[in-house]
Length: 163
Image (cartoon, rainbow, N blue to C red; front, side):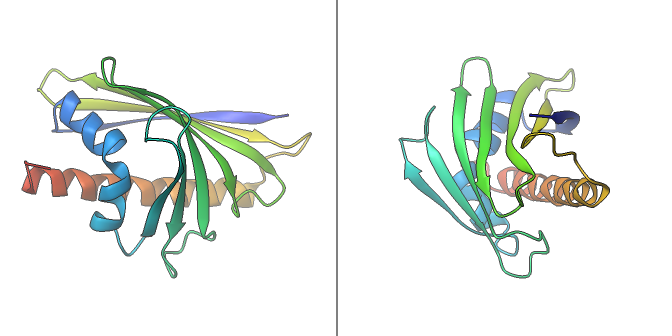
C-alpha cells in the first residue's frame, strides 16, 4: 500500500468548543442544511455518532465532485481535546486506486479567540498504485470545495449562535 499525506490549516473566528461542535459533532445536520447544492444527505448507517459510527454522505447531482457518495467511519470524537478523526472507507471516487482516506482534525485555540483547524489527510492506495496527476487534480478541486463548505458552515453558525 502506498500513499501520501497532505496538511492544511484554516482559521475560523469561532472559539474551539463552538468550532468543534459545528465541524465535528453537528456536521451531519449542518452539511445538507448549509450546502444543499453540494450535499444531498448524510445518513447514519451504524452507531450513535461516536467512534465506530458509519455514515454515508450523498453528494448533490451537479455538485461537480465527479463522485456521488462516500462512507465514513468515525475513529475519534474527543470533545475534551478537540480532536476528530475519521476514515473514508468506501466511495465511487476510489476507482480501484484508493483504498481509504483518513482525516485527522485538530481544533487549536488561536490568540485572537478563534480557532486554528489543522487537518491532516492521508490517502492510501491499493497495492502499488500511484496517485495520478488526474487524481491529484480531483483531490485539489474537492479540497477547494470542502473549504467553501466549511466557510459556509462558519457563516451559518455566526448568524445562528444558538446552533
